[in-house]
Image: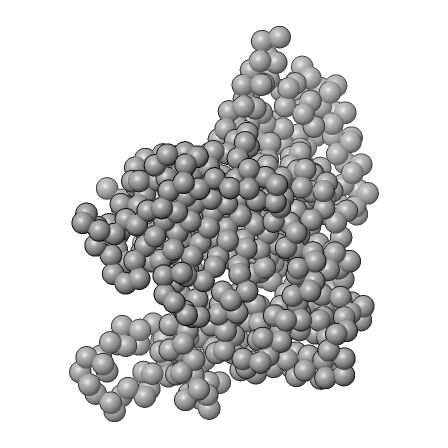
Amino acid sequence: MATCAVYTTPSLHSCFITSPAKTSLGFHQRQVIFFTSRRLTKRGGGSAPEVSCSAEAKTVVIGLAADSGCGKSTFMRRLTSVFGGAAEPPKGGNPDSNTLISDTTTVICLDDYHSLDRTGRKEKGVTALDPRANDFDLMYEQVKALKDGVAVDKPIYNHVTGLLDPPELIRPPKILVIEGLHPMFDPRVRELLDFSIYLDISNEVKFAWKIQRDMAERGHSLESIKASIEARKPDFDAYIDPQKQHADAVIEVLPTQLIPGDNEGKVLRVRLIMKEGLKHFSPVYLFDEGSTISWIPCGRKLTCSYPGIKFAYAPDTYYNNEVSVLEMDGQFDRLDELIYVESHLSDLSTKFYGEVTQQMLKHSDFPGSNNGTGLFQTIVGLKIRDLYEQIGAERAAAVAEAAKV
Amino acid sequence: MATATAGVSTSARGVVSSKAELPKPQLSKGMLRLPWASGRRASSRRLVLVASSPSTPPNISEKVVESIKKAEETCAEDAASGECAAAWDEVEELSAAASHARDKLKASDPLEEYCKDNPETDECRTYED
């Protein structure tokens, strides 16, 4: 599909081919269409082939591994907000669709690639975490197609009924985010990802959050919540957890060290583990890149209330990879704490001073807006925007080079 | 907030099902502060009912209860089997769906919904100077 971009250099505008277009490159374009339509009909999708080959619009694919469900998570909302616009479920489609679409971003839930529905899984005695319950071939095919600018008919997994619903049409967006349990499990899919994130919640915090979520629910008790976590743990440790080592960024959420014996999970210690040496990603740092820093911003210039804020930054190794770790423990109470912290962090990829604070304030009602989870999710969002712009500029330059030849 | 609502809902459990029909939950949000400020206990009960977080739609709630019962039964037979894990996985999936449904209910403001689809109408025009 790279040929498509190169040959359309005379006009760097998007070219939407639904039928052989009358340009000087007619021959090559027709070839592309045949290839596309053959692929689509093989999957049984009857929609007309849509090939958008625009030099700057080859999709950037981001993978997010998270246990919390699909598309509606806070991380997704923060991410799509950094790019502008709110992400909505597709209008007029299945109301139980897991997909979110905004102007620039489309978020796909990987649960849609379950090969077994809820009854099927019960019969076979497998959890959704088990790779046997997922169709990785289809996942790879469709993510590859979207990355190459081809629309796909993606199945829908209905979380309410537990059944696989008829497919919905997904058009290739500028940024495709695949969120779910196994974005980095299959090596072929891993290759397609331009950036990957793993959200690592520690067991204590997970337990505390699930209690908050489920205790108000009729039928649940402390024992049932505990049993549910325990029963899923073996599969989680075997199949989901190992994806950590492949992630470009890991957000680790741990209980706080500032309050001894705290088990409410309200004050959190969050670590942003960033891989070094990546092409389009430069880690955030504190004061001096590559050194070890411990920083408590509260003091003479800034007054914080209990339990305060503590930062740490250090280089480290994580599963045999060189990483930089930025850590925040504690809570933000006021706007000036946030802006103070932002002014001391470096390489945030912001476009103007105070952008991180502004993004955090925009969503002050989201969970995690007063601690490291919100802060690091926002920073990762800005890093992804930076990555997207760098890749776009690179491609545009490559295309311009080819035009000169 | 969650712990507060847990406390409230236990006392209001009997009336949870009728909460969905209570009109204009938005109005009461503003009035929420009154009972504490003025110390009027008479009206506080009605307001306290609405103050708890939106209830899960009944069909999902039913499913969660059923799945928990089934999981407990399956695991009573054989706690280490794949069926037991699958049953609790189902509970987790349904609890997550219930939580999303609650959030959706909480977030729906009729004016915002209307304006999303019709931004040009008089009620929805915004001015940014």
